[in-house]
Length: 470
Image (cartoon, rainbow, N blue to C red; front, side, top):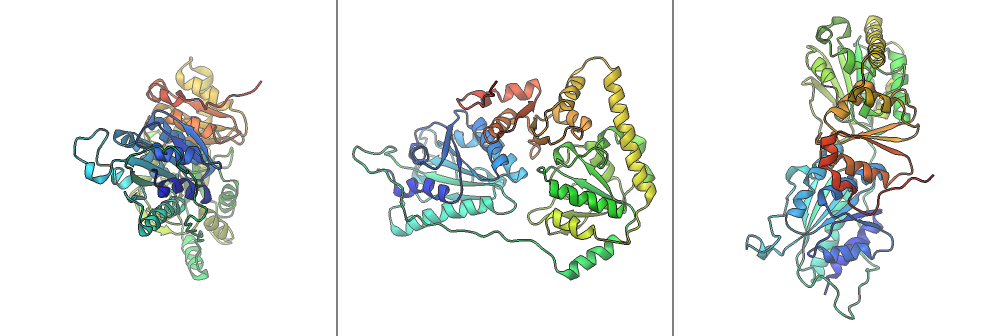
């Protein structure tokens, strides 16, 4: 008999907004598979390769913003989720990872498909929980339902991320003849209301007063989703203050003529790494990682520079070794409030130097494309310059994403860029793109290299590949 507490995991997920489930075949996970596959409100897909399945789930969650449930059997199947789990952790993408397991008394007893699965993902999940092995007592049933709620609430909570629930299961794995298989109508639901992050007037006055002391302000965007309202607030801030805005391709904040898009081209010149006219006295950053090694090296060399990072919650990395202040609010709120300043005196030579070099960098890049023989870089240039508007671009790691950062997508209106830059591994690029394509009506383009593509060829080993019409 399948435990009701296991069946109700699917019901709790559906009631808390989960829409998509990715299953990988196995016998130990059969009760979970049945619970999710039979639920009328859930979209369930089966992907045999666990590593690809997890990255497909990541790509889906990346688009929907809702946790995707992953289900696998016991043993090393759970380890095959690890690359995608780590990527989701560093990209703040919500996943609920459900791993079937042997009962605890059979661990380390040389039974098949049995390893130490509890807390298997270590520090690369927001939380790791162990489901009760015998949820028949009312207290155990309450405990089981509570754990599923806690796991999903944690996945949703800012900053979002993966949560692991390890589920020991005893035989039988399938309903017996005549057994009623039904979802409880009174499952326990614990709702968590989101909070807002804001400052008092006194804090804003302090930030405003400090900002007025700086003459060379550089704003740098890390990897993030496309956000027109945020982009507009930053542009207004730069117009009012004279600050310079630098945007990597994966920041989804590039725009022609307004942002510095070709920094990876001109900062490659060693003499510019220490050029006084480019030196900021205040760096303001938001969102996640950068691609540009040239920009990172430049910022790490700037002695005496203050660094403010804007982020509502969660761990903040000191990537440039210059961090001086963490500002706990949403980036849009920060720039919107501070673009009302009326007496910031930015050094015009600083602004002019950055924009002049950006113009030269673009000219050098275009000239190179016109005069150089055919190469993989030139092929990448042609692809990125001819992407359809309002489409999605996925970039594999290694040279592909670096080429794209040199070339940029500012001239392609409405293109949103994705790349697995949480861990920057080559595994899972194709799978992530497939998951994204399964969760959007937009055209998805994947630019990849031979090694990344071959490494992840099982991304195409299933029956759900999107098909275009016409």
